[in-house]
Image (tube, rainbow, N blue to C red):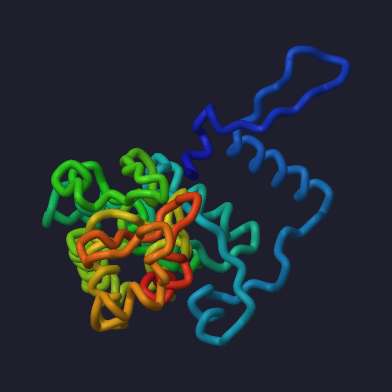
Length: 276
């Protein structure tokens, strides 16, 4: 996960063959040094002539070049410097805030967007447009603690745990309700904010390490979908050929197709339910 340029655990290693030990170089020093070298050699980092305003560039349909930026993980006294460096490097826009749910909503129903407003204002002042990301990919600890039913279960039947991102069941009603709540608050707060030119909904089409969720809520939804598709158990068992190896099902015993040496509940049957 991206962190502050000054975080010493995120470093570039360089080595002078004539010297030992290795020299440690953090990312901010690397960027500053690189910019100085480019300036000294007359090399321009801009890939095209920047518009007077990145917002104008978006409106005109000009080619844009953006970069992820994390003011939520960077000391606020560095935001101004970062914005100037981003603009100087020729970037027209940044994507921010997609992992900042804990700062936006420190406790359930209590929202704080003041810091995000300050970050957007600084970027806009430096002609860097903002794409705002909704933070549902990384729920805060209070949500995980209060609603443990949101955890994803992988194909081996193991429940995922918090501590990173993408550990939630995407079909869980509680998770969806709270995700919608924070996204709605963001839209109401930033919908007309100067400098914001777009939105990213959630983050990437991924589902943690499993790719699918096998929790009890998904299983209940799968059973409901099968009732709608096959109408009755006789039809389902006939189409699936479940008499082989004594696997004739009743509705409550049908599980989502998890890993097994052989399973009658094939992924072919599950896939339309997962992607409906």
